[in-house]
Length: 454
Image 1: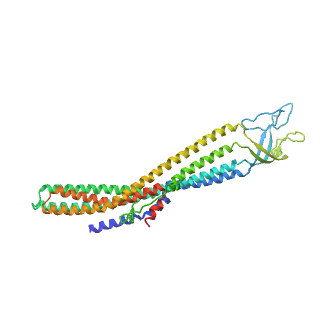
Image 2 (image 1 turned 60 degrees about the vertical axis):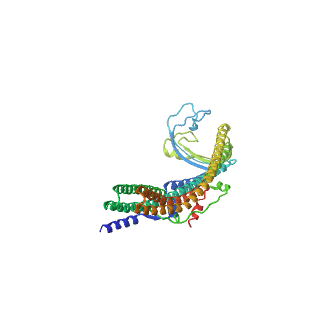
Image 3 (image 1 turned 30 degrees about the horizontal axis):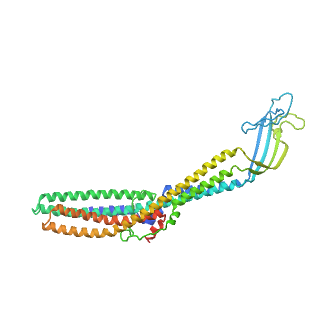
């Protein structure tokens, strides 16, 4: 009955764990991970800014309508607006002020179309386009880096799972060994110290099993986080423990197409286009302007008589229109634009140097990953030989111990060596694939890694 309960519990746990292979993990991570979604939103936002920049080609058309209730005393002479706020100077010029207010109305429409801007709008549009390209390259680089993290976590999880299996087998082997030794001690065939030593080895094996389980869970949660949802996962070992990866050769010029270098290059291009836009912002604008307006007032424009009722103030008395062209040029803006332009040129130089630094790092990473891959591949080829040798040594030590030609500590050393060799084989295979992943990451070609799994 207890066995049935245990089996049912395992079946329920397995059914709750989502099974996925590497491609499914990558798809889930790119689709569900919040930071990737944030970068997608950033790309869409940058695309909208391009449309916003293009609206500068459109004319500005504003309209307004107002009712007022005010006095209308005035005097001959000019005045200066209060920081751009101008009160109407129109009104009757009389010997005495009249403080009785009347209603008034004013409706106007104003068209201002900058038909010639000497490339200012085009420069701003180019800046917006470059910003959208930078956002797209940033998203591409984030997706690439996230894929590398997912693959690395996937491989690390496979390694910890295999090590956990090795430690489970090691515990079972140590348990059988301890039971055999204990029986021999009880029957008087072995000294009592052997039973204590065998018990110690069983405890060590259980400790290693617990440690491997902890590592396995940690890697599982790491992979689950990268896929966008913390949950139990069951991953497919695919061919990672049955085949070794093939060599990948890259030319130095291929580094220029890595996502991170494209991102740094786009940042430099964006800064240079921004400096052009800043320089052109000093240029003048030639506008076509047009306006039409109508006014009403409680003061008659015929005999200057007062009517304080609302209807008299809202009836239009005069109508006007205006057509013309205007040129606007802020000459003193030159100094601010000049300093901003020089500042942005330094920013462009900064991004250029950062690009050069990143290129050096990519070249170093590629060379290091190439060396690491060759060493990892050789280790993976030697690991089965080490395991076979450890198995032979264990069998010989076991036979010698059972025949009484060696002591227990010598035999347990062969047991430890066998356990380490069993784990080393899986670690070496995964190490070769992880070294290939680092080489693909350094070259920016993660598809070359995935293509070897097809």
